[in-house]
Length: 99
Length: 129
Length: 110
View 1 (cartoon, rainbow over the protein chains, first blue to last red):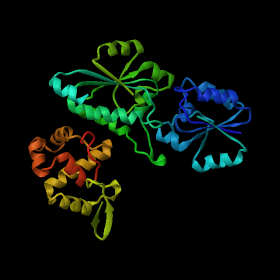
View 2 (cartoon, helix red, strand yellow):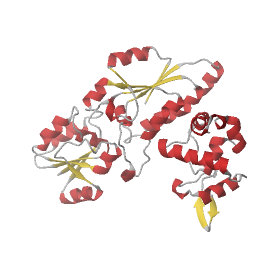
View 3 (tube, one colour):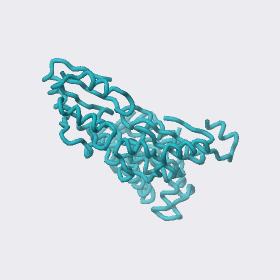
View 4 (spheres, rainbow over the protein chains, first blue to last red):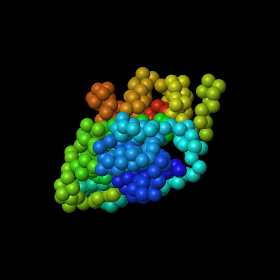
């Protein structure tokens, strides 16, 4: 299952709720303001790193670049472009968009 | 707002703009910046405070080409020419985001919450975005 | 609305500002000036080019007060006066020069 998160983790609890409901082996894709969670050194970096032990965490590169965050990404997070986003949707039977 | 200031003519009030939202996901940041630039014509004593995700408004390296939006972060560097010289950022907000002043496009003064609270007490008008 | 330059139609808004900043070139500028009843000369080009540089750097068209100050700093004190700028662009240096420079209307200009 693919989960997308589009809210800043600092502003909403979207990321946390998503992680509570995402099973091991699922894919989390951070988009829009959700990409702030993909950056190193934040209050949520450890949360993401822990999630990465059991899930695949991706982030949308155009959204990272737009926010000036593309050089601060936590190592191991998979960066995808729009085509990669489409591929993820295709590869997964279900998509849960956490808003 | 403008009429009141016109009537009082010459009275300089202390204005604070409080920015708490990330720059791209919503319209708040751009709205705030426009209000500050327009308001600058009234020659008031203006300062801006960046709290919470508002810090992200002034980080370096934003490149919005791929998302087909205008990148207005260079405009913060024009604020000085509009006599908006005092920019404050929250120490706590910087820390929990792993950011330092080197990550920012403008010179700022870092303050903790209690210092910012004191500053708020000194203002005539506080506008929140 | 639109203007014709070199056989090409270029879209403008209801006040005559370019809709797409990327449509701008010197020929377009001359045509925009003509629509304003102005002929481009060295002095006007200097201000128009200054505005384009300013926009590139700050992504904003400056208010008159800011333009005047910035021109004075960069191009010389004698040019940094509203008298000088209004002589070149009688209907308002910010509005008229910005239009010719292909920029949006300055923020704060109604």
